[in-house]
Length: 159
Ligand code: HEM
Ligand code: HEM
Image 1 (spheres, rainbow, N blue to C red):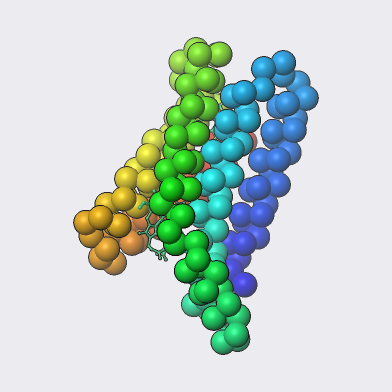
Image 2 (cartoon, rainbow, N blue to C red; image 1 turned 120 degrees about the vertical axis):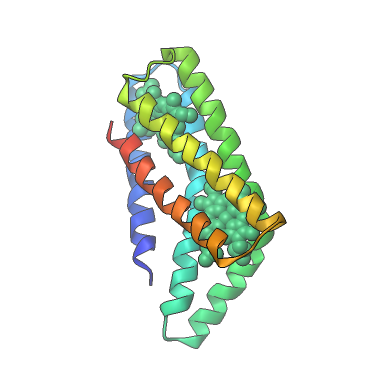
C-alpha cells in the first residue's frame, strides 16, 4: 500500500477537524462549505496517485488487477472532478474575499491564493496532457503539481 493513502487520509481528517471548528464558531457557513467541497474533489483526484503507486509496488497480481480495473472505471470522470474542484475553490475564494476583503497579509488568504493558483495550473496541465501532449515530461509536471498542491493545502490548513 502506498504511503500516500495515509497522507491523504490524514489530510482529510484534518480538513474535517478544521471545518467542524470553523462551523461551530461562525454564523456564515457558505464559504467554509465551498472550501470543503472543493477540497473533497481535489483529494479524490489526488488519491489516483496513491492507487497508481500501489499498482506499481504491490506484489499480489490479484490486487494489481483489482486496482487497475477500479482505476479504469474512474478515468472518464477524472477530468470533470478536477475541473469541478477548481470551480468550487474559485467560488470559495470569491465568497471569502467578499466576506473578509482581499488582504494578503492574512496568511489564510495568502496561502489559499497560492494553493488556488497551483490548482489552476494543475487543472490546465491535465487538459493539456489529455488534448495535446501525453509525454513523460507533462506526466511528471501533472504529478509534481499534485504534490505541491498537497503541500500548499497543508499550509492553508495550518493558519
Ligand atoms: C482561492 C483562494 C483561497 C482563499 C482566499 C481562501 C481563504 C480561506 C479563508 C480566509 C478561510 C477561513 C474561513 C473562516 O474561518 O471564516 C478558508 C477556509 C478553508 N479553505 Fe480556503 N482559501 C482559498 C483556497 C483554498 C483551497 C485551494 C483549498 C483546498 C483545496 C481551500 C480549502 C479550505 C477549507 C477546507 C477551509 C475550511 C477549514 C479551515 O478553516 O481550515 N481553500 N479559506
Ligand atoms: C484536482 C486536480 C487534479 C489532480 C489532483 C490530478 C491528479 C492526477 C493523478 C495523480 C494522475 C495519475 C498520475 C499518473 O499518471 O501516474 C492523473 C492522471 C491524469 N490526469 Fe489528472 N489530476 C487533476 C486534474 C485533471 C484534469 C482537470 C484533467 C483534464 C483532462 C486531468 C487529466 C489527466 C490525464 C489525461 C491523466 C492520465 C490518464 C490516466 O490517469 O489514466 N487531470 N491526474
